Image (cartoon, rainbow, N blue to C red; front, side, top):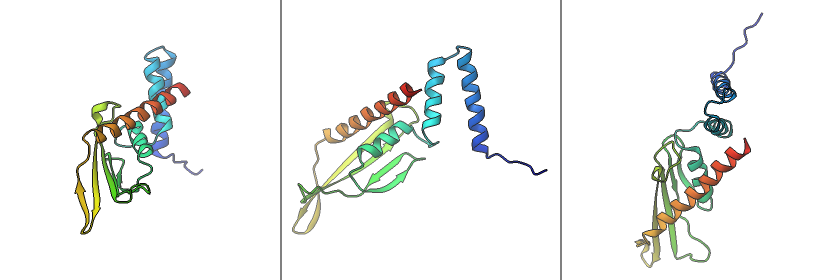
Length: 152
């Protein structure tokens, strides 16, 4: 009789789900267990907060990606110039620093260049721009989290 081998991921997922269901059926941490189960079933296992990760990719989806590291939490875009302002271009670096959905788990840096006769030169950017990008990412991450928990 041949031996059936189950992948380790399937076995660990099954055991985790069994534990979560067992805790919730006893009334232990029902809301937390429901949220954890929702997170586990909706997103792949990455090294950073999955809601911040997805929200960052969605928020910056109009910019071409240069580097993406879901385990290190790094998203670096390539330079982007809009059709409305072809004489200036922007680049974003976003670092997700934690597995928790918190405001201090996110750091965004925005860079700007303007076209001159000699090529592209670095330009000053409003200090509030990076904060606005961070707030947009955090808002979207909260929406994704709420939608996932409410769906359960």
